[in-house]
Image 1 (cartoon, one colour):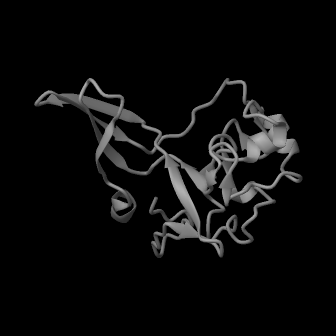
Image 2 (cartoon, rainbow, N blue to C red):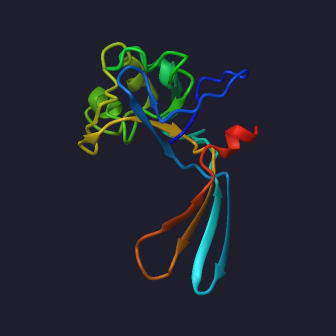
Image 3 (cartoon, rainbow, N blue to C red):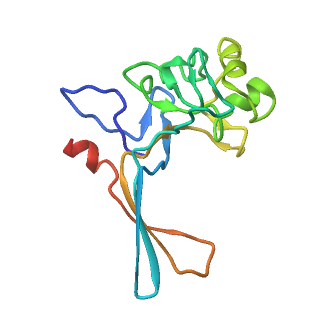
Length: 175
């Protein structure tokens, strides 16, 4: 994902990788709004992907640095990329310790941790940006909310949904 999480209002500097380790950032698309229509036998839907997790009242609770499932990446003191969680890089980025991150599983032995358990593990568990235990693939950091508008299509038969268009970084450039 091409983003600028630094919040420098004087200059926008979008990137796809961050820090000395060139860590990639991916995005949970969290639609605030969805619109749908059909044309020529295909189903289309558009999503506004700025969303948040809206976890009020869930089992995850708010405790310490964790607001339910959300945490700013800079609040992870132990990251295996020396400068990734600095404010100039990904420090302000809202992320999650759950899928696809290794953090919850390494901290609690499963993805079923609450915020009290996660907060207790902040000083002893390394957030591994290089490899995800959940997928056993190359790691990265997942941003909450895509900061984009997406259009998807579905033919009504197959299991696959196709991304037709995504605004990408356009929204950040305009605002």
